[in-house]
View 1 (cartoon, rainbow, N blue to C red):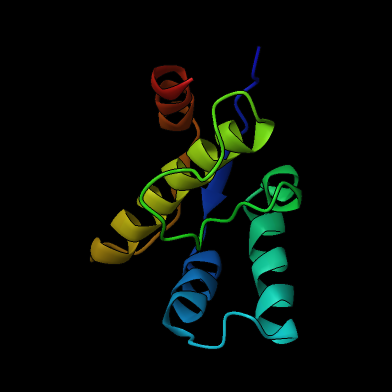
View 2: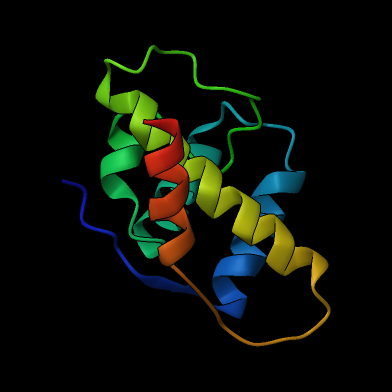
Length: 109
């Protein structure tokens, strides 16, 4: 059973996400270092090490459901959607997430 992890999208995490989303040099060492730091701040280090990221724009996972990385992609996608929604929301302040990502994981697993 997957235990949901809770974290908060703070303004500085949101700013880091937005800055990385705008960058074109996605294969540079600096980009990867900043991506790893973002994933750490979002409590998604395990997902990072299965080669998943909240910065992944692909429409679906590249691996079948039998791989752990498939579920990790779903988790990252749920957080990505929340980050994008927070960027679109003009109200400042921290945004909590956690409950929605477990419901998405259950539907896709």
